[in-house]
Picture 1 (spheres, each protein chain N blue to C red):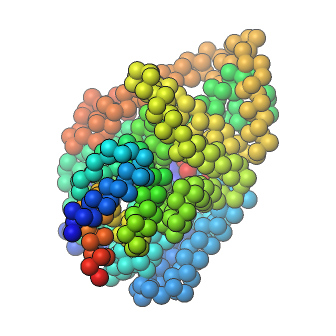
Picture 2: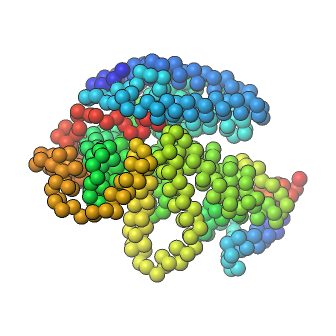
Picture 3: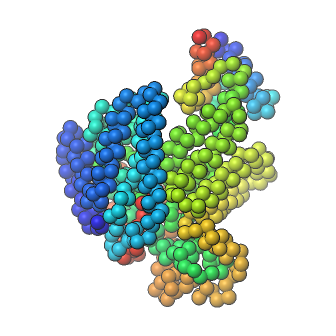
Length: 471
Length: 80
């Protein structure tokens, strides 16, 4: 089933309007029904799967405190679901996930929308109850809503029960929240339709074609993938948070200016925050705690385990393992050399240090993302080889502009240039734009500019879905 | 009691951070000590457990926000 943007907009307007006028008592039930319709419309098996896992986890968690066998069984069930889902996901990528004009095709197969996201929530839920950090939920409807809330079910953000459940009964959508939600949604749409989808042809040309482009062309393509991934996923997150806000819910932030990070450790505090928080709380900290007698070694084992689990979560593919391996090396290096680097950095002005660190971190992330995006490890290594050979093209127009600008006629060059300019503008003035996107009042000028840019430069014949929907 | 714990903690902190002039207070946190990162944190926890011959629970370690929190838990443990 395809999700047509027109369906989504009508659905959104109806749900936000009705939700606003419903009494507090019926609002959660109404949003649950809306979520059921949304998921069922996209993919009926997904609806059955989300309700099934919610039901199982709800009842398993009831008497789980201190019961090791039951806890391990519940844990195994959720972990198996993620691995099973990812196995089919990675083995059926391609036709199952192709997009068509003005909408995205949801696979009709067993693939369950958002399962790997809400399964992490379920693991957090049963773990917190087992270790007496939280109490089991008493309302099954609230628990269903926690897992199936339609604005976060597709790709998160991942929230703990305590962060979400408390909002269900105190939920009160105000006109300020609706205005703020619209501001946030519009920038998300701009990020996705203008920047992420605008960069897609360049990234596709470098990563998916068998041509061996010049070094600088490949390098720019590699940089653009990381930027595309950011605009795609943060655009999705803006839309998810904006929609939730219109319904009176505050979801967790997923990004915080990640390209301004001066260390890889800092990068992971700013990129896909809700997932990293989960991995830190439920993988890294427990490992480090149980191995604490080994002191520093425990930390390195914790880092390695966290990224290896993250790789498996992203998919059973060797490229994800290599991606994780890069971050294990980066983070271990950072921890081991912190004192030396602090001493060296004292010799240089703070601004020089900062810019140099940002540059290194960005390049490190882009390097690891070659594995993340490439269809195979061989292809990834070939791209790296291309970067290092024939760096400067003989003909800039045919060897540099044409591959990146989707062909290279004047119109395509112009579109690519506009995408790059808007991308740079959004990255440079991100803080100011974020303030506009979270403002409590509608700013007509800001909304008009965003909508105008989407109408003029947005990619409407979409061939690319949200990148993170595959996980 | 808390003062004695603080003095002993200061010895551990100075050893772990290799800084003989380091002064800690109950309000000291990772923000005040530049090298107090995740790597040093676990070394610190293991060293404190060894010094006071106690064992922190996972939930306790997760709730440590500053030196005062650590003192409070050590105090409770020593009273048992």
